[in-house]
Length: 239
Image (cartoon, rainbow, N blue to C red):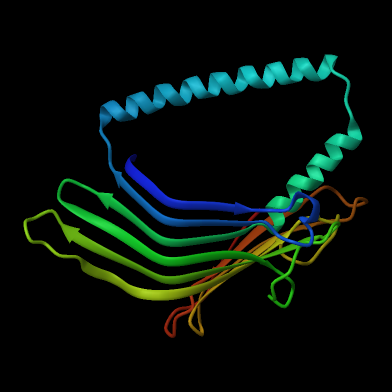
């Protein structure tokens, strides 16, 4: 795939470095338009060469960083403070997107998606707006998608857009474990999405470990269900 063109009308970042735990940072992006096409073989080869060069630069940078770490004095307190600052920024970041339009163009047709608004916020266990406190073991994120729609359009004179999905509103809630104890029953991650009052997706990812005195053993289970009057939930477990 190749990004043919794109534009952003307005970007705004509001944050207070001294009060990240009290006043969450806000990022607002308005007027996002992206056009993507399949590209061609020449583009794929050029992308492969660029990716290879980027990997070489990353490896060289890693070697330089390791070499610098061996000779440079370390300041544990400063590193810890920076880490806490970055963690607070990422955990409490509130993102608002508005007027989003993405198009995938082929020589014969176009598939597009529009979204009026998207809001990603941090919440507490009851899904009320909140900030992540220092030492928290769980992270609750809530995403509100407003007026999401999909359409197709033929590449022909006078062709109009044909709706694939009429505008809908979605509410998605995710719960993530920030600290994993040696023995636990709660899922590592859970995601629930609702279309109005109907649940359309439920995902659970969990792992169970035995006490340290028992032989080392862990398993990962993934549960996904699509809520529909005639559908049944399916569960998959992998060792």
